Length: 334
Image (tube, rainbow, N blue to C red; front, side, top):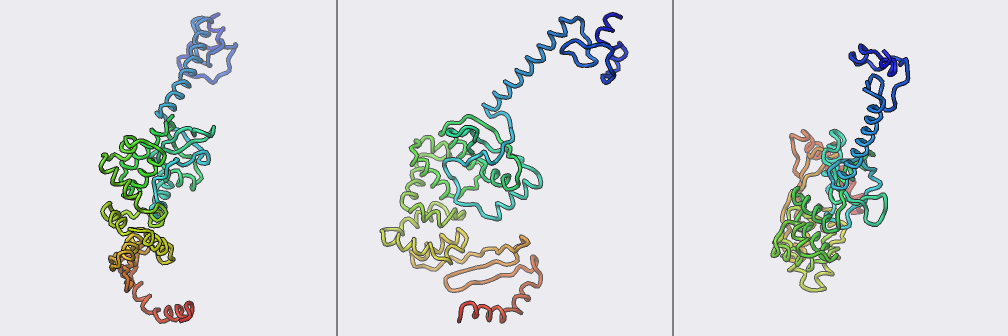
């Protein structure tokens, strides 16, 4: 009974697992209510063991964070972009789709970051820029894996992630390669980042060297345009006069209003004096439907109405053509 009085609990109490009754006496240091000790020394030993286990768990978490094995939540305001851009803009439709997906289901895939090399308490993205942007807009924490990465490791991770997604266009990959070379990364590192061989990499960088970077940035990602067409465009920029003409044309308001693939096509047509390939582009309505497709050439613009997406919309527009034309004349003064 002396032992039972020492810890203030009966055998029946312990067996039942009840630990919320008041204790008749003061428990030994380190024991939770309902816990039995064979001796005061044993209780102290277990207490020290618990402390040691907690320290070991904390050390293990630190190790996992250092090796990138644990996912943590970060304030997006503390996370900066990579020092190498890999995109020439993202379509608003794709951004909204990702935003809605994360809003509905949460951020399923963490981003990869490293501690910022120059600013304490901040981080730098290796990959996951779009997810970071979406989470930042939603006002929530971003789920991230933190790893200590060198510059070479960061760009290799960044490039290989993009290759896995296969959603970067040819010119985005080529521009990424050229930017890495401009920062004195070796060709071996760049090849590892992009997953290409030496010959392919040389062709990619050569195209970027032949086309002014600001002109590439104005054209944009041009997702449907491959290496051959970009090479043909470079062939048209044979001298400074052609480059000047290209810059002037690319800054026109009607040129900038086009989607990226069409920008490439119209500039190519302007420089080579051929007709623009006819390409239909979907018009996205405020309700995110696509009731109209617009096909445009040098000589005409054609609207195609999707009767399934918006029944009767074509008749609605047809009936208002006269008033639309009169409004157009008032606006333009014709």
